Length: 299
Ligand code: SAM
Ligand code: SF4
Image 1 (tube, rainbow, N blue to C red):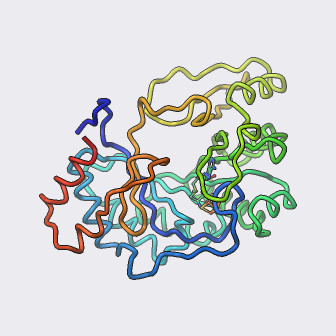
Image 2: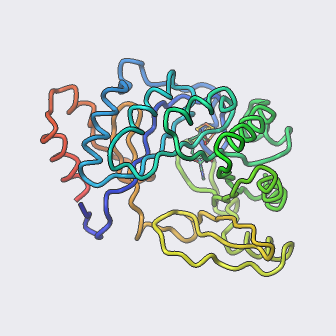
């Protein structure tokens, strides 16, 4: 299943809720949002049915995300339903970490394979300024619990000039203590009320220069994948990544699409129009009909 640029349908990001327990400036800056009505959210059985159809068309990497995915009740039940599907190559989760310490063992037992936790700062005052809630301690506890349960993890940090761009080395050093590969994400213009500006973006080039000044020569880890992060090695062997979606978009090799909690399927993070799979599903479409809708959408 290739699209018009010969990109395979391979990676599916499953948003399991639109709700969140943080209000990151760069994502959901307002205090109040009108959340999706519960009846509009896909049930686990519906998600599972759609996953089967996506997998029959080539998807084999699935990442659970949100909103904050750990706010979805009984998430481990969904993990269990997906993890047991034949042909699945990867099942990962991206979380803000607040509720992770309580859930990580259950998620692992259900078949989750990898965890990424978002962490932009190690300073409590900054955390509150960035995300509105005083939750850094719980996030750090969640990271340590994930490290214990999985042996390793990834930490994603959005880098914003004048906000946390002086913490690149602190985050790498913290990553070492929990066996986490740290990935720096260039600040993206995701629209909404986020007040993105080009000046606030710290480019990959600049991040590499700053880290090189501190650590010495940095080498790219030679690999060709469709993963969004370019990976680099510090002189002591520590590997980190940079996701440069803003200054060096990786659209040419992107194989990701996104299913929202209410069943809208978007072909790109920046897409403004999606395909309503919930309507098809609840309207009685059978497997072949769902397959045809997804296949023609991707093509
Ligand atoms: N709530 C979970 C979390 O924060 O990890 C999962 C969903 S969150 C939308 C997924 C990732 O998108 C997070 O790592 C977050 O930092 C990133 N993100 C959100 N808005 C962004 C922006 N404007 N630029 C770059 N990354 C962004
Ligand atoms: Fe919530 Fe994640 Fe968005 Fe922050 S980045 S507001 S934690 S969904």
